[in-house]
Image (cartoon, rainbow over all chains, first blue to last red):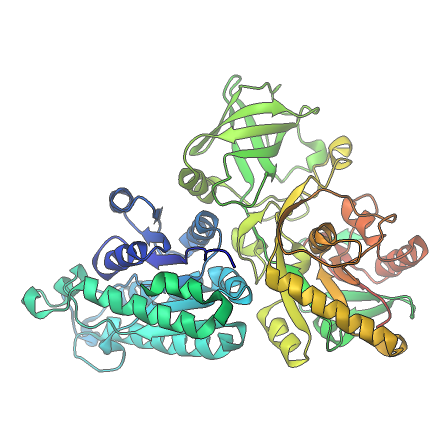
Length: 243
Length: 359
């Protein structure tokens, strides 16, 4: 084999918090990254800051945005090895009791946290399995939360949607193990991010995990999963992101 | 035969005509496709996703309405999206049969086109007033974004509702390089892929940038298919090689009567085009990138592919000409008569034929 081609990775919610840290971490390790976010200004700003990335404007919560997003990811990267469903919605803030939650607000959060990852995964699945068949391996990482497991009062909307996402990851993983696509659900921990500040505004940021640290752990987890999938002669593919 | 008019990829009543030299043509349900394949066969599909290649806009020198249908490009490279070959129609949209569509304004090299967020310049008129080469302005990411926002899948008048990308991407669609869907692959869903594994039928893919299949203009249609860039993964080339070794062994054991295994079964004409272009005289397929230039017709001796699952095509089309490499004209005419009698539907969302050696 000649030198391994760079890993092709797509990250949703890539202009702030953990998503932005993931874009920087992946790019730093030589991956070819496309990132998605809703705001054109933010996308352009990050694309300028990280000149070898591909910024895509779109909202994973909107059904009609999914195929345009997938088209740009797959078109600009020429395929896909890793999808990171990172974009998340807390639901209505300040956080509130489920009994005080409007149904419409719950639907919006489910669209971002559950249906969006489902739709985008389905739209890029052909590319991921192509990568797996070619011996490059393929991984989908769905960003989870300890709220997906534990029942915290007032976190109901976020928590229920993340619990569903976690279980969906497990089902995808069972169904696609024979196609060579691995699904990971990872809780990055309580981080100093805009999302956390919205949820718990009075937390001292110094007590929270740095998103850069969490991003490194997540990319390590992806590299490890790829290494387990990839045949030995193509080991360089995962090595290029393993750092 | 009539065209399928609903954009449903896998209608539960989809039909399959099985054609092989050992039997009269057999009518079956397409959901039973795998019953006509054997352990050891290798099924190969085209995993190209389909571009939104129809772009509505204006011809800047005259202000006239145009619909630009991107038709081919030079390579599969993600950055190679500046220059395309395109067929240009005048005012109107897919609701009008392409045969009835007005001509575009007179097109000249250097003319600008405004296509939603995209700007393009005609760089050449290719021996036909509708067929041009064009170049988009901007960086590749801007062109991809413009195509994603403004483009629509190519569509013909027999389907009344506008198609969305999810209507035309096959379940296995990966890189968006096709101009029309490799629609034989609509039949292959993930349940089928899993069932193939259970039955020890191997599954692999190629990627071929399937070009426009029909323009409504007999002179242009006679030039189809255009050259089509493709990629045969090394893993697929290796699978073809293993399959041919199995096939040769099967023949040696007189397994032919019982149904030879180790056949290479192409899902669609585009797979035949890629594999036959990539094959050497002995049928050995090279992995890598190439451009399929050869037409395949009744004079072609197939070297790599043994069977094809295809849509139901009208005799005038290049797809039908390709099927003549798999079966003689008497057989195909008999099959056509049977499909007409049984109400088979043509076009992308229609029924299917499987043409093979004895099965």
